[in-house]
Amino acid sequence: MNIRTSFLSVILVWAPLILLVLPQVKTGKELPKFSITVDSSINEKISLGCSKGCAWLTLTSACTTNKCDTTIDQFGVHTDYTTEEGPDLANFIIKIERAENEYLFSCTSGCAWKELTVNAKDLSTKDFIISESGGNFVDQE
Image (cartoon, rainbow, N blue to C red; front, side, top):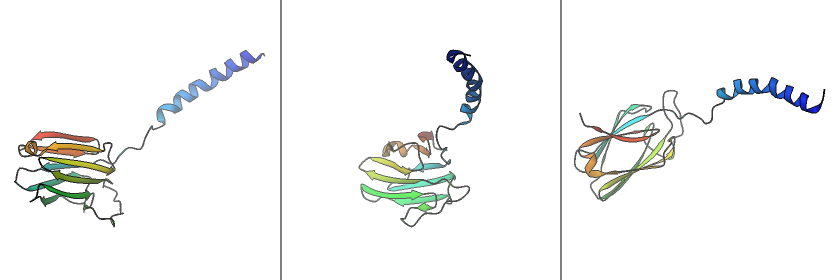
């Protein structure tokens, strides 16, 4: 048996096995899911409602100045002491900033996105849904 024949036999034996194993290998860690509705239809307030992945249901923050910010996580308002994880909770940290006429959402942990910017006027007529994969507007009910 020459080298070419033995190389070909190795390829024929191992290639199908490799092809069977490759689809089972995950390319990345799946992010825990969460869903937060952002509503700012009431002047100078932002209301958040979590329907999935949080230990809290609603949070409201007053923004009486043109510049204000808050940071949230799966437990509510984020502090440096929040380190727990729950079995049905997502593990995320999102900073919400309001400057002039827009909101900036910055995710530092648990999201596939880094920043989302939303016009404050748009939030007065539509809800904004934030999840681990991004954000989108929906009509208010």
